[in-house]
Length: 306
View: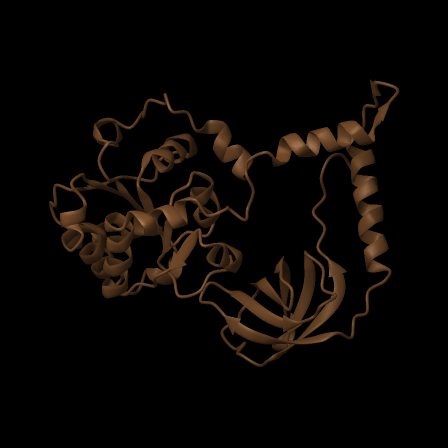
């Protein structure tokens, strides 16, 4: 993801969305705000956000802000924003446009998950409009901060980043735990080294690579003990659970929750599983519920026919 992001960022890029993005003065402070998560649709999110990012932060924002909402929120947000000259409401731009907007803005306020990985790669502080995140490693690294949807909290944290240079620098310089954009290059160099034979690079067919990966996965699966038990630490509103225990769980493994509901492991941490995507209804799952390993690793076919 970071490799793809950095590949489209260009300091000479010319925005294609006239006249809003073209008119932004990036010599001044520009706050980018995105809102699209479904769990925020029915809340007073727009009211809180408009008050925090526009009216009360106006003294710290000599330049206008740029707001890219999910289309279902547009009417609600327009009602709260009115005709504030510092705010520009835009449709979500394409990837290249948005990547270069991120690269030039001052900071990001968002409820997105993926942007918690991407913006820090561009050295932009991220304030997350959620109480929990499936990316806790970003919080620990100091590249993002959870602020929820409270007007007071948003105002306070945005103000600190805009008015206190040392606070801004600490977040902007924090090491992004999701990579530095050189993963593809390193991966290519690794395989080149592995398959170099007397200076001749051996060409590999996609089915050969798939076969190697499958053998590795099967070797892991042959050593699994499926009776490991853990417990639910918390379940976020987006269906992402944190699970304690299950030290032998694998990335991509299916876990069984009460009621026959399954989840897939995403983030493995030292003493817990930081992210399990629940594949089904999760409203009945609560803190303390037992979680069991299945020993089954999710496979996604790649390349040619298996």
